[in-house]
Length: 91
Image (cartoon, rainbow, N blue to C red):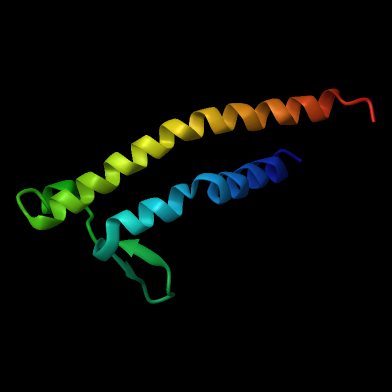
């Protein structure tokens, strides 16, 4: 049951905040598809991009990632409260 709630939270989070979609869009050309068609970031180490144009792209993507992450904390708290309310419901 907890896995179902976790999946539900993830889907709701993505539909509400677009956490992964927004992060993916922010990294732009730093992502390529692997042989199975899955997106993979091409930068394996931050030091690869220091002093290169990709550094700003990666820095901006990381900034966005952490800003959205802060919003997620509040979203998770609200979701957990809704689950507790469901458990307390006598129906």
